[in-house]
Image (cartoon, rainbow, N blue to C red; front, side, top):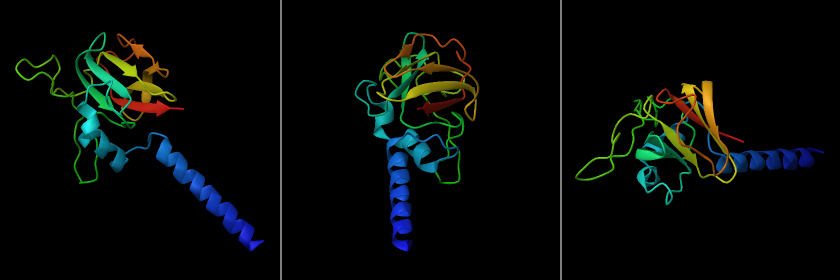
Length: 161
């Protein structure tokens, strides 16, 4: 009896760890996820070459500066990578001699469109921090040319199964 309980508990732990490794994080204040979203080389790669599968854009029609996001973001203005400080998520500084519109601007309340290239998860951009308020949702492989509910009024992002 005792051995079967240990086996079941071990299997449950393994399943939990696997789900955490596969599903993008939606936890508030997840330092590892915030760190990846802030510092990963994937964040500013060409959107279609990035391993981060959500792309948020400064202009309508997937135009202007962009930011690739790999993990849920509780508050675009306060990512906490675990060093005791909070940092805003910013659009990538794109365009060397002539910066694209929105380059290096904060994402919070400045995004106009988005694209979800994830094969499995729906992407949601929320009006308020903490995944609250109205939102615009993009199913897998969908884009929105101009956010209807959160146009230039966006504060958080989450992956939803």
